[in-house]
Length: 160
Image (cartoon, rainbow, N blue to C red; front, side):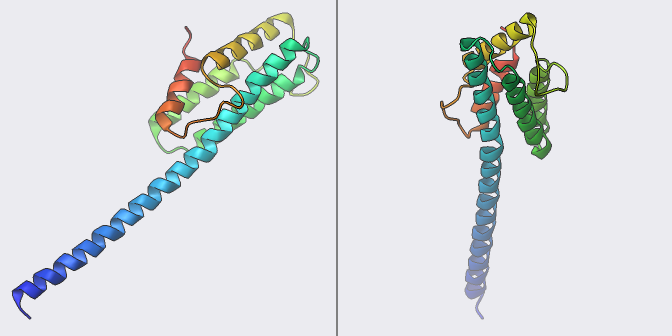
């Protein structure tokens, strides 16, 4: 074989190898996007439901206040799951700050049969307002982009 034939063969093999690497990277990126879509959507959903539940209880004179503690517990569980599945330290730290923020509003381990006092209700009203002002509302939709998700978390956990 001529030298130019060998060069052509090497170029073709190199091209095929690069295409395979590109496809593999593309598949890994899509897998990561799906993970974020599933895990982040659970947090969006649970925080949106928490905000809606708090507002409903305010509007209906706290007729079923245990729902608020249940929705808070659901939101905390979603954050814990997302945190456990995350491999990036910076993202883990941000999710942990969300967990710590939400955990401040948890009063005991009891979920059902809860009776809230006026200070606890005021804290939940404040949490509902913070959720709304940070964009965590039900039926608003969510963005799969991590930076937008992180920005909303930072808005929520940063006291203004």
